[in-house]
Amino acid sequence: VIEDLIRDLSNWGRWGDDDEFGTVNLITPQKRLEAAGFVRTGHVISLALPLGRDGPQPPFERRLNPQHVMLQTGTELEAGVQGGAVDGWGYSDDMVIMALQAGTHWDALAHAFYDYKMYNGRSCSLVGVDGAAANSITAVASKIVTRGVLLDVARQRGGPLPSEYEITVADIEATLESQASAVSPGDALLFRTGYLEGFVARGDWSGYTYGSEPGPGVEVLRWLATQEVAAVASDTWAFEVLPSGSTIMLPFHAVGIVHVGLLVGENFRLDVLSEECATDGRYEFMFVGQALPLTRAVGSPVNPLAIR
Ligand code: UVW
Image (cartoon, rainbow, N blue to C red; front, side):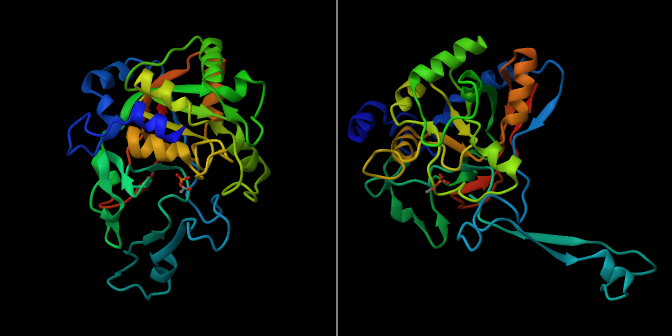
């Protein structure tokens, strides 16, 4: 199955041998103008989880939740121990240490490998201790402004999808029909499964990451490629259904990121957007999902915005 999909869907060379944008090439200036036309009220909804120590990663995980550390504080100013402070003038500074994949994030095209290769046929060895020499998130960091479409599969199916539920093309088409929405080339398509919000509501992330989850099966890539979707994201930790039923853990990553060059986002919070879209029946919006211009990084935290 994987080899058939690669044969049919690979975009290696499509936008040139030097290309590092992948499907983000489908987001044109004209597409951004079209996206702006979906702003009716100016209401902005963030699709990000808060960045803090109580993020979704388990304790002691290599993918460290954000650790916020103060470098200068007001308490030091008041105690008279802040260098350079005069007569009550002072300042505060801080820093964050975190895994770039810990919370709401984009996967760069350097994030996934298959057959020792990454997007556009580049060797996996280009990602070493110095970071990614190609396909890093920096390439697309400032390009992700487009028309967004919420694909509310959870609402269409009457509630949060059970873990291990495979979203099929039939589910996608039924959901679009129920929403009276359509997908067009260059869109960002946001899959709501309802999975993440259950953990948020319980205030307990136990069992969220590295286990089973609902999501699209690998065959959905054929549909996404036909529609020329530029980016996908969901309210799960790995975007695709798990277990995958494949010989490799993440076949959607192997075909979608490595061969299609698809921008994939994870841990997006979609419940508030879902309520708003259902209230007024508008499932399309302007989507702004700029990554941080982190040099040589294989992913980036993002504060995705739906502007309606
Ligand atoms: C892996 O689990 C390897 O990656 P992701 O962050 O894309 O789920």
